[in-house]
Image: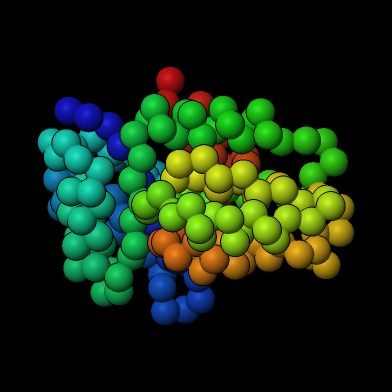
Length: 178
């Protein structure tokens, strides 16, 4: 059976979107997932599934998470190979002068015109790199006052996204993709 890494968007934020690890595991298993593991309580899940397409895995998980949590949980699924490639890109792109390196994981690849709008926001110390279903937001000194808004990526691209920091993505790749 194929393995997948799922990223849950917007859980454990505020009082109304709590989704405990045990509930995530139970819901993932209810969706047909086996060998389920989680990493920290921000919605990172490794599973195997009989389903063979990313879209079918996402749909099954989203249905099970809604049933268990009581609210919609957008879910973005990657193969271990895809996640390993994103992590390798992240390590290649990072620089010692960065204040932050955010990775936005996307449900779907964004349209080129939307990517161009996002790239136009780059500043002298900030850089945006879009590769497939991943966006690397490389924020240099003074990024808070720069033209790149780290919270506007999803809106700018018009796709469902969730973000993780460099450490989480590279740790998951080492832990689950080897």
